[in-house]
Figure 1 (cartoon, rainbow, N blue to C red):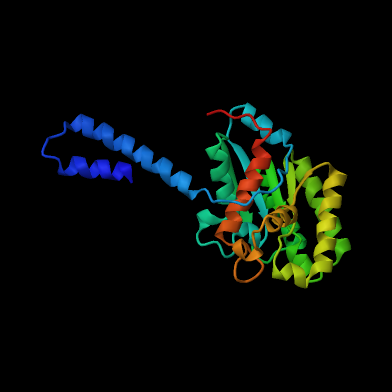
Figure 2 (cartoon, rainbow, N blue to C red):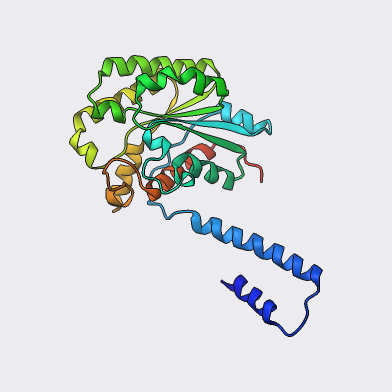
Length: 260
């Protein structure tokens, strides 16, 4: 607001401002306003425990000075159901958060609403392996729990998918389910599918980012599910996606080389 006031003073001043000085002033003003916009765009997120993510391939890419490629692979929570715009999805927010910290990354959104392990496994080669990612964040299990899919099949497909990503040289992070009314309605299967994700992460020596743990901490701190979940009771709203991205970014950047 102060910057806009200064511009109005210049615009209505009786004195003539030299063109070069005015150009420099406008440039500085633009940078100031961009910085203010970025600062205002970062949400006020409830505190949650840091989920530290050890990602050697991603760290190596950044240490080599190249732009690292992160693939957000998953279903509707990744695609961004109920986000108000594409730049309000969690992958877009994650890229912005990491770049704000000086990390040269590109985050690609490979989410497709309605999919679970079988559909994602079918497109893994063409969509994920062929892209040669440094990191894959794989969000799944929610649809399997809702549709009462076979846990045995889910475990097999998950193991196959993670192994193939590791063969391709990528770091892999699995993401479990969110809180909300749907979770309470499918509590037993939700627990079972989340348990398989944790089990396979441990087996394969990879990382699990737990939305469940994050949102439990939010709730314990007084943030109601309705503040971060859309009216459908299942997906995140804009604030939920933004705060998910900020929590993920905190876990990623903790061990990354930063150059500003």
